[in-house]
Length: 327
Image 1 (cartoon, rainbow, N blue to C red):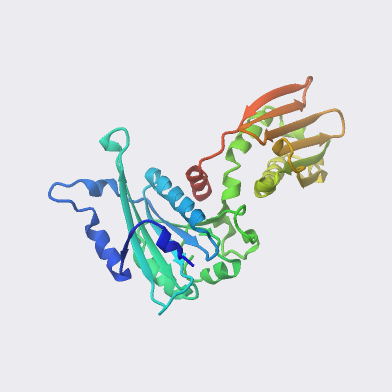
Image 2: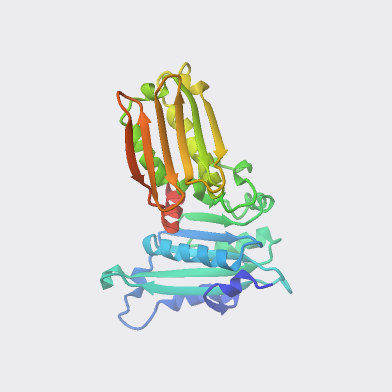
């Protein structure tokens, strides 16, 4: 079976030579100014599990490179080896410069790839620490790493990490249930991808007072297609948080409303739907169509019924990553 480090770009190097090569990589001669375009703002570790496919690994690596063009980063990619052989680690070094519309918009990216034996948690942390830029914050993206193994990293690899992220739409286990040392420093990419949806719904509902939205509220239902199950769960949690801001929190009827997440009928025209049900003729409905980025909003919260077409442009993967890391 092919190891992920073999399918990702970069030149092969002995592990001990990587930092030495980095020190001279951007020196192209007297008067060279390349070094000023590679000033990193952060360390970003992409951590793969054994079951990640070659296509998935390439997609996530390319996302990181695009991310680094906007947020210059020291990228470290951890690739477990299926057959560690004698147990030694493998390394690659990737570098590339990108030029924008003018030469002043140049950005140089570097990625250090490490092939490692998955059992060596402590030794892995030691090697990563050598590659990190020690004066910069570190972020960690888990992709396909088993929950039990992540727990073993709490006391070594994740010490000092500013934020860890994962994608619940991709992971086979519910990583939110782990006993994270600091849950506030953990985020889900599925939640980050909801940003355009939250903005669309929030902009409309902000036109009504919170007490008016809560009065007589009986149900809040989010329906979803199979691929948006994780986003639906985060959407219902966001709605609970928003409605709990009512000044009459303890006696607010919204606290007794039924919040539920349901699967859409297979082959339906909508991929994500939201429905507020009230004890009178008021209602609020929003839905995103399965095809394209379009949807519609229908509401009767005031004196008349409103129907508004909406467009929810999905976040690019690198934009979702920045939302998950920084917000």
